[in-house]
Image 1: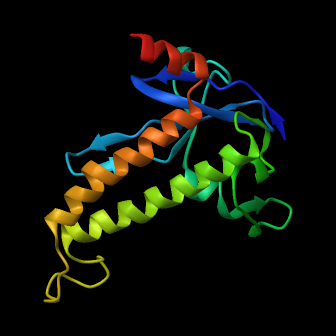
Image 2: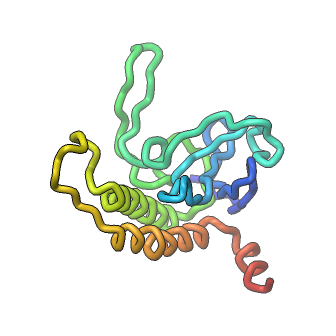
Image 3: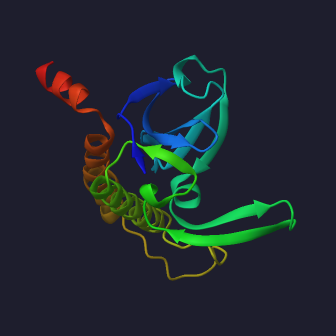
Length: 183
């Protein structure tokens, strides 16, 4: 896998991290985390923009997907000739993803990012459970809620920020980190 320089940018008022370039020539970005609807973290959004390599001047995104569906994990590809969805091999980290021609990460960083993203998704689901008190499978009449605002708050306000800080450190160019420390 070819390696390209790390880069952060902004698109539609949001910070984005360059992950790499795909086989169609699009730069692929991870959107920075945001505290949404005042109760959960929005994160893991993968973006491609109408201007393939210039998101800040794009009029729109050309695709929106999720880390755990389009970057790692069990992938599904639509094969036009077979008119069917075909499962591909499991992808463990971004540098193993055949849809990329280059990424900003070495293999060690790529594995660490996958680990951090998996932790994020596990904690996001746990926070939702502790906030709502149920898994959302059965209707609200079931009386065995597992609700804990203490655990919900610990996950969202203590643990998630640790994950986000490390992801920011991995995906931010060294020169930007040094500049921020000098400010």
